[in-house]
Length: 220
Image 1 (cartoon, rainbow, N blue to C red):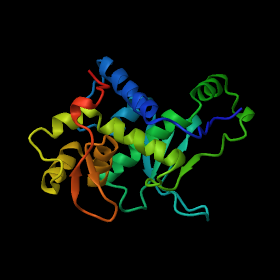
Image 2 (image 1 turned 60 degrees about the vertical axis):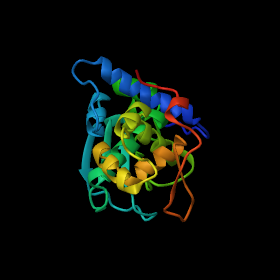
Image 3 (image 1 turned 180 degrees about the vertical axis):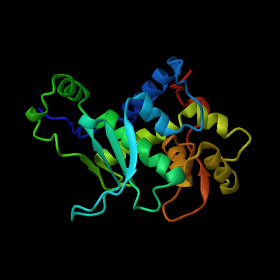
């Protein structure tokens, strides 16, 4: 038995739906609701997760940005990394929530906690370590895509971009500030939605192949 599952491949549509499901559950809870900009610490609280900022020492294999301790239902963010603050800090927490939703075996966690059978799990004392928030493949990409979908669902992108030119950097920076995300988070999300296109190594923004009308709405 393991507290972790490592899916080799998850479709974008599946990840987006998982993020949408969390938002919908929050929306139906009168104590929480959903407002934007979305603060992922509130999402963590809704999911019964604690988030703490603490110094995480290197294990000799590289800098650790964050880690998850499943049986403590705890996300730790490394406060010794200066850039894990502000909008990037929000993205980091949302990224870890993505790991929690997509990676953690929740049935096993719940069973182990309720039955106090922690010794049955060889990985009990092995937290999940997250070394990079920018990896473009595998489980790190999955978690980062979840974070983007959680903090920037399509209806919110549509609302925030009203009256703005998505091909103009001077319009995108205020949009990122309104959503409390980094400009990289925003442009990556817009490119994933194929609303804009930026060639590698270039700063010029081109219109994407799709428009809002061609995008399915995952939130009512």
